[in-house]
Amino acid sequence: MKQQSAQDRWEQRTQRPLLGLAVAFAVAYAVPIVWPEADREVTSWCTRVEWAVWGLFALDYLVRLVLTERRGEFVRTHWLDLCAVLLPLIQPIRLLRLISTLLLVGQRARIAPQIRLTTYVVGAVVALLMFGSLAVLSVERESPEGNIRTLGDAVWWSFTTMTTVGYGDHAPTTGLGRMIAVGLMLSGIALLGVVTANIAAWFISRFESDDVEERRQTAAIEALAEEVRALRAQVAALSESAPADSSSVSGRIPHQAAAAEEQLS
Image 1 (cartoon, rainbow, N blue to C red):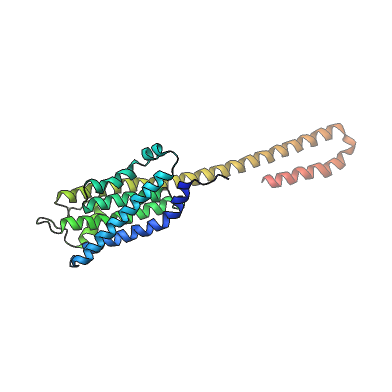
Image 2 (tube, one colour):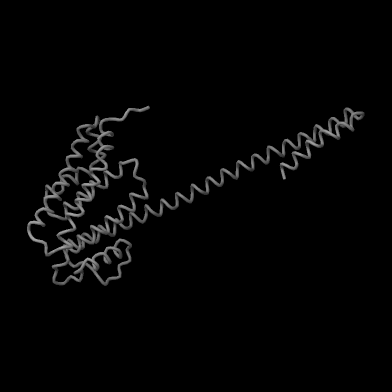
């Protein structure tokens, strides 16, 4: 049995705690937007939680980098994690902190072997809808020309944008809002492609299993038919070589041939 590396053990042990931190980040990000009347202390605590969660995910990346045996390859294959860690430091605005944390959560969920594709896709859809709605509401609520004023408007806009329907009854008017719209559209197309490919792969696997079973049954029938032909040839050979024993032969071997024919039918 292959022994787990230190990096694999770390990733396995920290999977659930990091998932809990992601939930805490979601709550901290949503509270000031859903509850705009919250006092400054609540908003300050939510900001601290957001930075703390991002910092712990960044620490997780650094620990994995230290534990891996091939650090250069790790950086090359996890470049998106590195960008997510550095993004808020370059320009520490709230939207970038949201994007970087979502990227880090997604990367850690993708490497977890116990999380299946369907669960990952469903979680990604729910997260994108929720955070997309909150993000666009936070940047469009105060826009003079904006028409996304409530959480219901933002959720409806996120649904129509991710599915690329785009009714046009609600649309972002700010630059950040349009950037969020572009991200949601691209994410929706990508997730729709993953779902379609997953369903197609399921159908193909079912067809292939049915085809294998059909080939197995056909081979069994052909083998049984060959046995019947061999028995008939034996009957004919015995009948020609021993006419005196034809009564005993006709009572024994034809019975075997008849039984084989019944199995074939």
